[in-house]
Image (cartoon, rainbow, N blue to C red; front, side):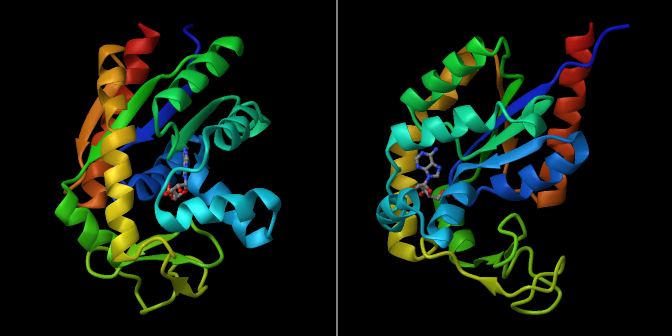
Length: 228
Ligand code: AMP
């Protein structure tokens, strides 16, 4: 019988497109390691590490943290036990050199990417969404949006009752800079993955549950194709 191969996925798309929300759902569906570089960096900042101290200055400005820091972190992370049967990268790669580094690391491990999932949303909508985004203090994967996906009780996480906060970089000036950085450095990767035959695109303006259904269906098809 054909062996079910590991699903190694990356989520592409601008900040606020819903990558984290979808990642959390897909993690549960397919038992994947959800690897968010943004969450990893924020946890270093919260722990007051040297890496966190250095990263914070870039994050607060909406700029990318230097590649050497990020690439080392990810290459180690995808080799850990929980990521051996499949991973979902959320927020990485974000530029050309990170995409190359990922490709090389996977080759060295005799692995390959299964797909690049693009969730796309126009800029005006992103600014509105990000300024209303709230995250759980206890688990940053629990994400809400005050208008589109509000918690049952204002300011409180539905899943664990912890307080909801606004991320420091979800303020309008920083949001605009993050979008600019996305268009200049990250969006060119879309063509790269398209040419590699790995791109699957989804309309991120739809309801999160609908986007989730579409991605799940695409991944189910992909799995079937891989087994053929
Ligand atoms: P995110 O939560 O993915 O929006 O990331 C928040 C911030 O963390 C970004 O604006 C960057 O400053 C930094 N960051 C996250 N992922 C990366 C990455 N792959 N490369 C460089 N910086 C990153």
